[in-house]
Image 1 (cartoon, chains in turn green, yellow, blue, purple):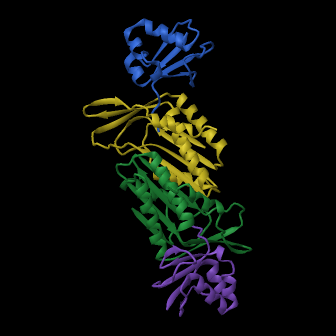
Image 2 (cartoon, rainbow over the protein chains, first blue to last red):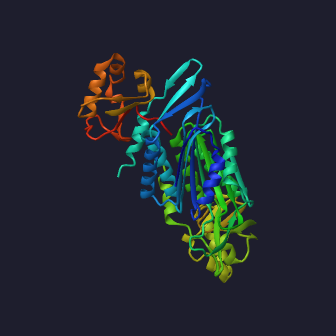
Image 3 (cartoon, one colour):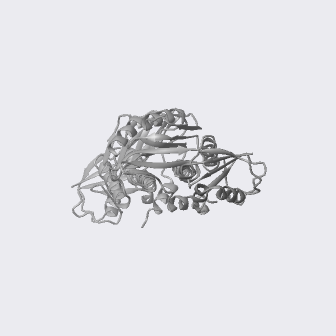
Length: 148
Length: 148
Length: 82
Length: 82
C-alpha cells in the first residue's frame, strides 16, 4: 500500500507501470487520474490547500477500509497540493485485485471518499480572480452507496 | 476513439500516458488493465484465439454504445491475441470524461461487454496440458445491470 | 455456398477452422442438423447447442435465425475475452 | 491551551492559519461562540456553521463534541479533494 501527498507533479503512466510491477498476482488493475481541466479556458492555475498530518492519516484510513471491503493485492493513492497548472494531474488512485469487479469498486470507493473526506480544498485561479471550489451535493450523495 | 487488436505486447503505462495526452478537456481518466495471472504457479502461457474481422467490428460497436450512454471525450481498447506469457498484459481499456462517474461506468461497461461479447477465447497452457477457459455465469450476469 | 467457421474447442473438435458448405438449410438449426449428420466429429461438436454461440456475417445471432442471404456462419463457445 | 487551525476560506476570512487559544469551552459549539464574540471577522467566518466542518486532533468530528483532552481543533469548509 502506498500513499503519497506531494507538491511535485507526477507522471500517471510511469506510476501505472511501477504499480503494475509490484501488483503481482493480480489479474485486474484499475487506475483513476484526476486532471486540472479548464472547460471555459479561463483558468490560469489551481491551488490545493491541505491539512498536513490529517491528510495522510485520513487517506490511510480510507485505503485500510477499501482493503477490508475488497480483495486487493495492492492499492495506491497520490494526491498533490500547492499550485497546479492546467492539464497537470491532481491525483491518482490505483487498485489491483484478482477480480475486476473488486478493483473497480475499490477505486470508485477511494475516489468518493477522497473527494469528501480527505482534507483538501481546491481554489481556482483565473485572470478575473480566485475562488474556492464549492463542495457538490452529488459528491456527498456518492458516499451513501457505500454504506453497509 | 481507438481500437487495437494485436499480437504484440504493450506497455500499459506508456499507453496511459499517450491516452492522457489526447484526452484533453477531461478531468477524469480511468484505465483497466487485464494481466495474465498464474494463481497456482502452474501456467506456462495463455493463448488467445479471436475472429478476425468480427473482433474489430464487435469492439467498435461496444465502444460506440459506451459513447452514446456516457459523456466521454475519449475511449480506447487494446486487446491482444496469440500466445501470451504469465504477467503480460492481455488487454486494456481507458476512458476519459469530464465526470468521474461517467469515466468509471463506461470503463466497467466496456470490460463487461468485452468479456462476453467480443469474439476472443482463452486457452490456458500448463505443463500438464492445455484447456479452454470456461465462460463464467457471473460474466453473463454482469451484463444484466447495463440493460436499460 | 456458405463459409462455415469454427473457433476454439469447436474448431479443435471438428478439426478444421473453416470450410465451404453446399447447403439448402433454411435456418442455422437446419445447418447444424445437416453437419451433425455428416460425421461423428460434427455430431460431437454440436451435441449441446446451449454451449454454443453462432454469428451470421460476423454478427451474433441465434440458432433459429434464417440463413437466406448469409455468406458466413461461425460457430464457437461462449466468448472469454477481457 | 488549545491549537486552533483554519483552512481555505475560513483561514482567509479570519486572516490567520493557526492560533493558540486559552479557553474553558466544554464543546466545539462553545468554542465557536467564544471566538465569534471576539471580532467581526470571526463572527463572519462562523456565521453559518452548517457550511463548516470541524476536526478534533485530526479526526472529523461534530460541533456538539466535547473538547476535554483535545489539543488541536481545525475549522474548514467541506472538503473538495480528488
